[in-house]
Length: 164
Image 1 (cartoon, rainbow, N blue to C red):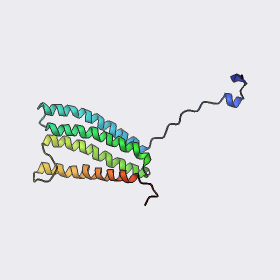
Image 2 (image 1 turned 45 degrees about the vertical axis):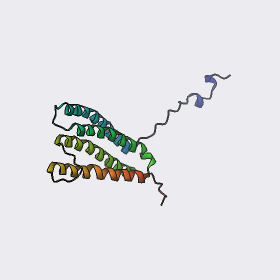
Image 3 (image 1 turned 120 degrees about the vertical axis):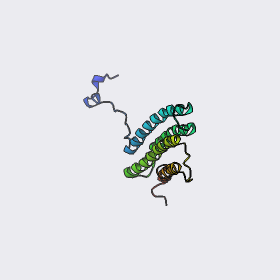
Image 4 (image 1 turned 120 degrees about the horizontal axis):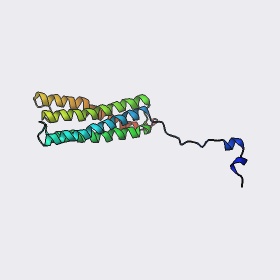
């Protein structure tokens, strides 16, 4: 049996290899960071829900709860897309565009739902009431359209580049 000192110099002085740590794509880090913040504000929104349910704030409790859940569910949407970015056909620019579409849609969904709870409007259609109609327009422009575009782009990104 040979001891360590009997090994050739190059073998004896070699440093053990460190594990390979995969490089995190910038868009994935951006989305994960946005998800972490959205989770925090979503959890804090639980206090808003409690205050609405006890009448301490003049907000609709069900809408406040919807805002709370929108933030929590949006967190998982963000993390899901971030995790799949390496599987998509998009380069860095396309990934960043997709990231921002998902971030904007989910943060706007939380924020606008918090406001509509305070306004006590549903905002699901134009009904001729200014506050409701403003919420409907804001939801359509900043939540519905970006979320649909992002979801469609996410699905499309799974197609192989050579598929026609």
